Length: 258
Image 1: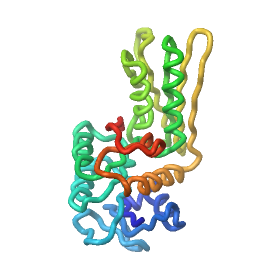
Image 2: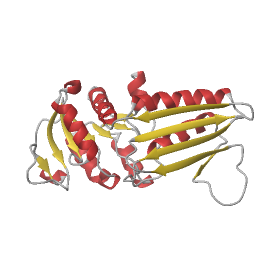
Image 3: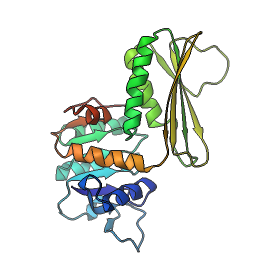
Image 4: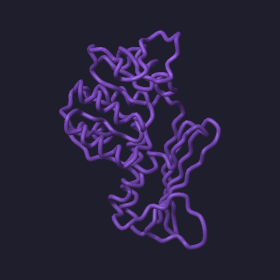
């Protein structure tokens, strides 16, 4: 499986590259795209997609920045290349572009590439459904270099919980005067040091609290998920796919929050 890594010079791009070098999931890095390329790179790295020549590429793995989405998808659609989008913070307009691209090519779009987080989402939904009277709070923690808040994963958790709580409203960063409503789902973002990523869902009644937590110990887990998604996606038809698709082996999915 021949991979183009978009954002290859970034932290996560390097993690994906390292896994490709180890032969994980049969992946091989063919080239990368990154505007911050350096002159001493071992791999062929292009500054933008217009420089990429015709070559055998089986899938694109994107760990870059959401502002690159339009150019990335134009390139992917022109070459008919399956694309794994691991970047977060997309605007509503960019999400529309992603949905349109999924009508032409297979697109894997997830706010978090961790299998453990996918399981956390399902467990949180089960707990929320079992305790319809419970209050729900989400706490997410990341390193001080992360630019978007709340995290895409926290929003993904909130969206999933809204599936079983359709009356719920999401409150990001509670402040000021006023009591919380029973139906709201609070999201709180912490940025500190070098925290890879922690997501905690608290589901509480006056008599008990269920706390579900996922903690990432290494960014390598997201690279593993990205290459697992790529291996899954190359055998799919055009459409939108996510971690639930990968876990369940499904052949289609709805656009998820990011």
